[in-house]
Image (cartoon, rainbow, N blue to C red; front, side, top):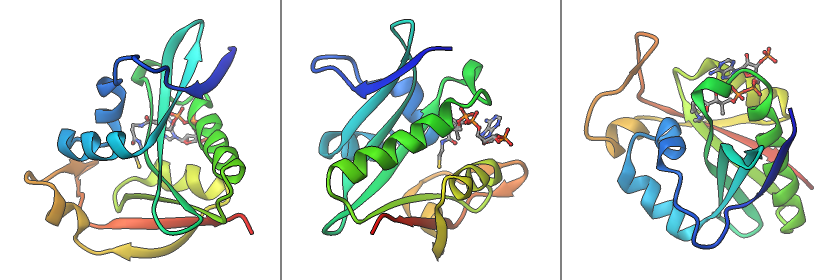
Length: 153
Ligand code: COA
């Protein structure tokens, strides 16, 4: 499986199918895609996954969206994307990378911690405040955002 990760091409369509897998709010997606930097994982020229970075605090980069096409999940592409995001952040001079995920997202919490992220806090009620509809994952209400950070310095 040969994967290349590179910035989305200028003029390339915004991959909403992938972005909305990670974040059901198109409004939020549009907001950070406009401010952020998007990267795609290409397999035989086809987009297999993506991530989006934004600068939050000075020298802190946040992965605000990360997703792999559903039929290609569980094959290691997500791990490659997280590692690529860390490398990009380092290259861009960041001292820390952050990511947030839902209280119910156990596989994601596993993946991020395996890549070196540590839990630094919980934004209580984030998903209740920012999303109009109640969201459930594996029978658990998505309410709180677990915040994770990887220090690069
Ligand atoms: N299916 C299978 N395994 C998954 C998984 C999924 N949907 N999500 C995470 N994992 C776990 C695996 O168990 C694997 O651990 P292992 O090495 O013990 O098998 C580890 O994460 C890495 O798996 P990998 O194959 O690199 O992940 P992936 O390519 O499936 O990408 C996501 C991970 C989360 C990006 C991807 O599943 C996805 O797009 N999910 C929907 C969108 C989403 O939730 N985005 C994150 C929002 S915070």
